[in-house]
Image (cartoon, rainbow over all chains, first blue to last red; front, side, top):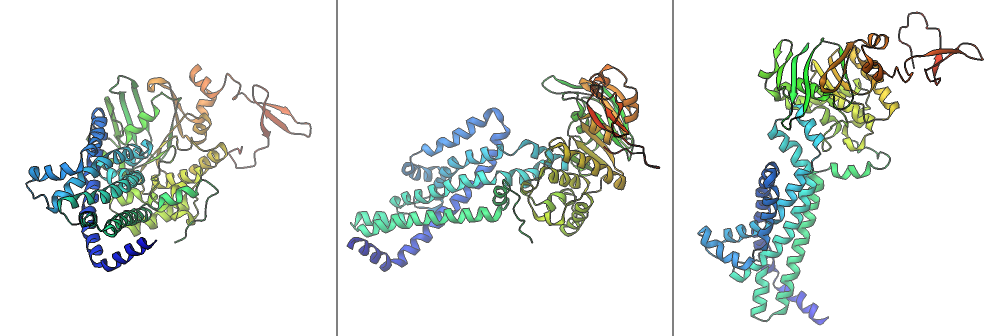
Amino acid sequence: MVEILDWVRWGLNHSDRVLMLTFEHLRLSLPAILASLLVSVPIAAAANRLRPLREVIVSGTGLLYAMPSLPLFIVLPIILGTGVRDMINVVVALTLFGISLMVRSAADGLAAVPEHIRLSATAQGFSPWRRFIGVDLPLAGPAMLAGLRVVSVSTISLVSVSAVLGVQSLGSLFTDGFQRSIVASIVIGILATALLALLMDLLLVLLGRLLMPWTQTARTSAGPVGRGRGR
Amino acid sequence: MIEFRHVAKTYPDGTTAVEDFSLTVPSHTATVLLGSSGCGKTTLLRMVNRMVDPSSGQVLIDDEDLASVPPVALRRRIGYVMQNSGLLPHRRVIDNIATVPRLNGVSKREAHSRAHELMELVGLDAALASRYPGQLSGGQQQRVGVARGLASDPNILLMDEPFGAVDPLVRMELQRELRRIQTEVEKTIMFVTHDIDEALALGDQIVVLKTGGEVAQVGTAQEIVEAPADDFVAQFLGVDSGRRSLQTVPRPGGGHTVVDGGGRPVGVLEDPPEGSSEPRG
């Protein structure tokens, strides 16, 4: 019990540093999460188009996740020509892990768009591109959001590894604490990372509700038609 | 006017959907393609908006060969209503109806006000405008589908078994409504169905199809009922099962009951009121 109080006191005393590191943590993870999504969607769409190669592409990108993260952080700069502690290095590595999780969600989500709805959209005069943006993408949204939530949690936890290389993030609380035997620093680092992952997850769920309001109402339609939300 | 000139369709996998089909669909009337599944009726319908291109032959709209018309632009000037409505589940009713005008670049405000008019035309409560399709009944969804098909005021309306998935009572109601709407809008309608009663109820011209898009008979409802061209048409009509050969039997209380060939009662006979030509079921 006494220890918990110690940890809290330590956290409060170092709140400036914790906040700064949280900010650094987000600065690394948010671009990686976003890039994972942006890169995965075209890969997934292409994989669905190239039927015979679909499984190869989807499973192949999935295998990226098997790469050990620490060596990747060290090998990437050699390929990219950046420094080991460069932010870009970390973001690219995290994006690769994100893609490995995201491509399958996106490919499955896009493939699950009902054929009769795609056909109907074509018959109304949607061009292939407009149909992709206006019909396929939004209808694959719920599946993609589920994938993105996993990417978000995974990315936020993986960022910490880069602290070993000396890149600042909440993981630095862990490495510092470990080197200087400050248990409170380690505990606060872990808690703050978990809390950040939780908050991001909540944010994504809220964003999903905001962007995909029809997914909320679809559930109520099973019973007697609910009262319309008048506008 | 829509014209099919010796069209054929063989799919890449080798199946022949249509062998040699010719037909003229007059403007401002409803033509029904009637046939069982696999007769190529949907393939023929989709040739009109180039969802399917014929392997040989021509399809023309007002003497313009469709082969030279860009498909996307063509589809935006032809209404299309399909089974299971095909509504976009992520868009509100009002936005679904406004789809084609919006694709054509009409402002949102204008498209919505047009959509409201159409909801009234097809008998949809204005309160449903902000619902999502998943919150509507099957019959309501089909009404939205019809409204969407009419939204850009197309000359041609293609309907692919639009009432196939709703229960019989709702289907009859929708058929009645479609006839009413047609007297108002006078579109050139091509309607695909496998339901003979639906064909008789809706078609100014009925085309009975055998497999491979072979035409068994073309005619009005009256012509087809009175003089089926061959056994195939007769069977489709249900002549051999006695469905179409009706007889009257006296009722104990006076008047007559109408029974079919199997002796099953189908209705009662009444003296038609003066001036009415359309008997009611």
